[in-house]
Image 1 (cartoon, rainbow, N blue to C red):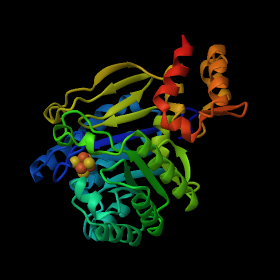
Image 2: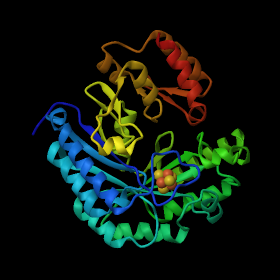
Image 3: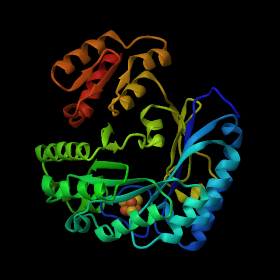
Length: 375
Ligand code: SF4
């Protein structure tokens, strides 16, 4: 069906893991077969319940995140994907991602996922250094990660992303360079590199790990290192923490950063549809019982657009802003942007206002300063 309405994404949260990493505050737990089955059925029922609101919309991305979504198994993931397809139109070239851990041999799983229509894998490598993997409490080895990428490729996946973590205990630029080189050697077309943040209530928080992590200056050096190294291997930066070979940017995540809409399913999933934000509570029992999502206000206002767009290297586009909100950027924001550009934190080519690499390092402060000009 042809439509002039913007394309949306669909996010599905699978809250299961086979253990808990000590830094993680995502909503996830262990589960037995009965629970996996019940959750799959609940997701399918929920997709059907959304059908009236999804009617007339078209999605070009579906993203199964977690947790460790592959714990559901290929057959259950296929059933959920089919129930989504049955209730919302997907473009023929839809990007369909599933997160996976780079654990031991998973050939039948990857083959079945590829056959079911999944065409992008995102793997939580985190590091190619055995000490750093131990520090993070990860349950895979560097060798297993390499095998997992090869297995995925043999199964037909060409669009594979690896996650790296920055700011780990004992991490030096040299160590980080080796992890970047590992990603490049695996010839994956996408790498994410996130700074470790010690979240309240996690084991890392309780153990006071924060005090053992690199200080702000060392973190800045690590950030510059990862950006420079990835660029040398041909990965261009398109977001604060995301790097890709041309054409392999995450289309799903671009929906978030461009402040576009996305449907959501699953305990703890957040969505943005028809101008309204909503979320499912971090409560699997509520989701299994079919409790509806909680309203979370409206979305898509000028402040939100600027907040999100400044995460991207393309930044805030004046033409997009004018088209979306029917007016030019506020004059006070223009003046502040000019000042910040003179200080090297922004670039402004007349159409786009974008943070520089130094700007990304202090993005919260820079974006906050610009948003203060929106009143
Ligand atoms: S595998 Fe991922 S989601 Fe699961 S506990 Fe570890 S970091 Fe969290």
